[in-house]
Image (cartoon, rainbow, N blue to C red; front, side):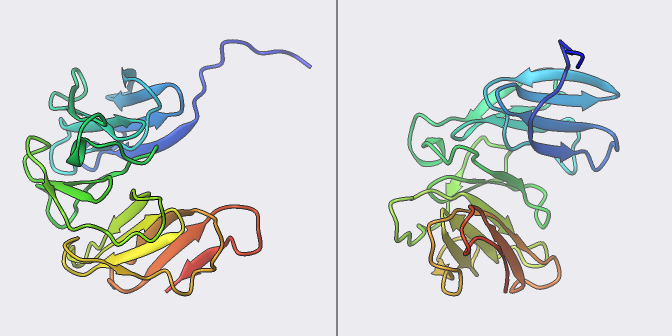
Length: 219
């Protein structure tokens, strides 16, 4: 065996691609922060565990990065500088989120970003002000959103998960229904939930773990 040192590798949590500048991207790495690849050049930009991130679909100079529990940064100059726009030390949008807190750029409304913490929070001015949606009827002590998705056909339809539970909103997060019935009643975590871009009632979810109940679901 030959031992190799100083290999430049990373464990990637998330990748956000630029739709206007193909080849440019932002990525979040475990224990190694977030980095951008702009114009063929890599640059580490923010620290912590690099998690959810994206490049604004309509403005490639606006880049979002994050680190654990819901701290989010924004750049408006193509990744040269970043400012903290959401933290985990307060209340509302600044409360502590899930370890890998999610943020989404709404494809139906390109002015809108959405963050998932105890509930959904919306901004239409790139994080200057935020508006909270309705409370989610959690039935467990896990009172934070793990994953969520917004329907591209009709953004009134939003699905969210919290540990092993799943919820649906038909009014853009103002009210929620528990749709967990039919998911096997084990203790495994829902790792993702995805909506068809063509049908707001057609969804998929994936549960983790090693027991017989952990599998992929379609509804």
